[in-house]
Image (cartoon, rainbow, N blue to C red):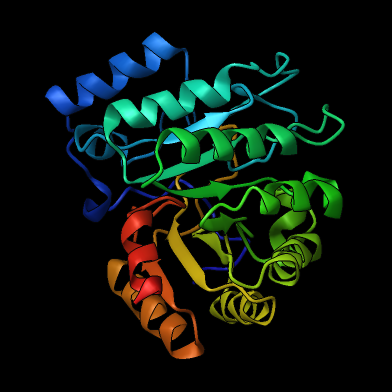
Length: 293
């Protein structure tokens, strides 16, 4: 991998060119989201898989608004003071999942440092609403760090999602540039606490590659995640949302992602998705099915 001083201005390689999908499935998801006034991380974070997922009738719901109280340099989600949480949102999400016929639902959020509990109870209410409205649907949540609060984490864990995801995002050396308001060791502690609170709850995390990390740094992060009890892993290519975000330092070739997938399995992860277009919820249901078997 290139080091941190590598200049940006790289040409996007052919393996990162992707044809946008549309069609009836795509229009159905878009129409439903607008009708219910719901947000998806697919749209807000400019996910490259948006067309494919929407065309297949799937989406990752983003609760607690579309403005984040933090301003990470890799993220396309808007920064600013969010609106108060919509008390009807948990039911809206549950109804949308029913309408789409989803058997596996992924829910994430912006970070809400402005709320006393960081939005933990809203997460819990959403999980409970989904399970009540859709008894056969499995639920994965991708949560913020709740500023290290064990109490708020317990609120979400007690609602019993099937998978709890908290992304480590990058190597610790790059946190000051990429995630200045987050804490690498705090994120590891969160994952470890989930196992202590509920040993049967699968934990998941992910990293972006191409931010300037080295192979050795990535390997150490994977070791740290395993030591914290993390079972599932995603690795994907970082793509800068704009020139104002952290620059892409390297376009990692597809064969290197395959090598990381093999290495991660060899190290002890039970489910791994690794590839240029992989994002946190990429084929999440399939990964969970592998874990069950």
